[in-house]
Length: 173
Image (cartoon, rainbow, N blue to C red; front, top):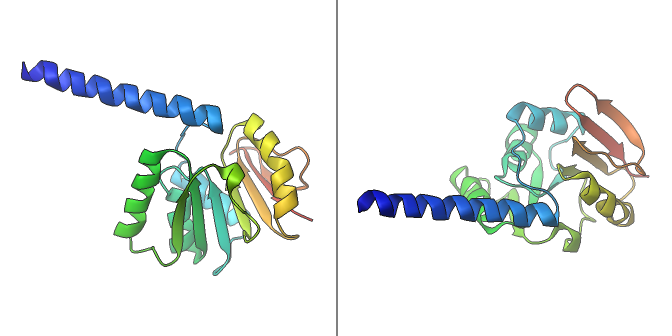
């Protein structure tokens, strides 16, 4: 009997996880964690400086936010649609004592104001980047940088790319 309950709980958790992936995937991108090496490369390519404000669109578990704050001295804002990853990233930030420099907003990235961002980090699907591009052009200040993992922004001026790791850096204006 105990094994049946355990299997039922496990099945429920797997189904919940798969539904979460499908739902967030349909709204922007499924969660695919970025390696710590790629996170560091992205923030280095974007030349993140202490005190700058980094936005991570679809922040997942918060690893970009943590690296921006701890390794680069930046302030960071993550936007996450999925409740479980939102709560997880909040917990990570609290445990690491980063609440003064890092915050996470639960919501749709298309409804968030990005005007204060110095750097925007994007690891979204190509179709989402295509939809996001006009918002970036409309809201970001000249000189703001956009660093994208894997997928590109065809209408933004490309500054540098790392083809080996599929990272693309753009500068607004």
